[in-house]
Length: 128
Image (tube, rainbow, N blue to C red):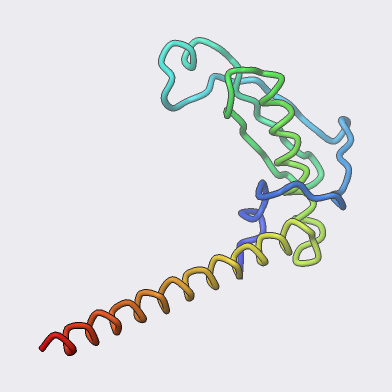
């Protein structure tokens, strides 16, 4: 099973719950991580909290405050959707489908590897 809130921010979904600005609490803080002075001296990291559910999102993907605000809202919207809808959420279904594809791809790759090993072994036997 996929941890619900980790499935957020995978793909754009159409049937997400709408967020109202009244339910959000927004802060701008200094970001962390690589970037040196550009990161350490500017408050361009956005911390967004959805008050009814208590979900908090921190976004510091770009140097632009506006882009970070937009990205934070998208991530929060997906997480709130997952929080309220659970396994019925489109985000959860997309995540589960992509995991299934990933497993199928792994399985096929493993089969191909086995086939190649058998082929090489057969070639070695033919040479002897």
